[in-house]
Image (cartoon, rainbow, N blue to C red):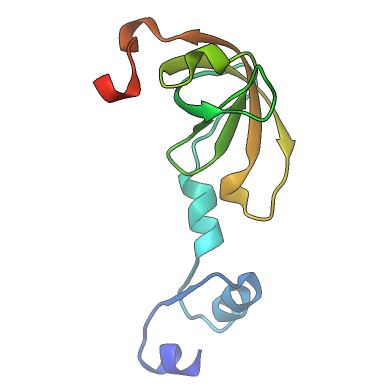
Length: 123
């Protein structure tokens, strides 16, 4: 941190405590976890999103898709839509994994997105 202060450089870190100390020392700092949270899509309960369902889920009725930030989405009753774009309704966050950008969120009521019907290879 002394070097960053001496060179009037910015500090980039994934250590929350270090970024707080840097701010106290008036060294501009960017915490990567803060950046990830700022760039994460804001999805609220009841929102409908369009999602590429790329593989089957653990249960016989589930499918898996990912948001652009890497958030895994488990879609209940989405198995028939694997390999397609589907419109799904957000229900809730069901688990908190170690990294905020990889939260698993449950979905249900999948239906093929009419304007984007087709397989992923067609897109």
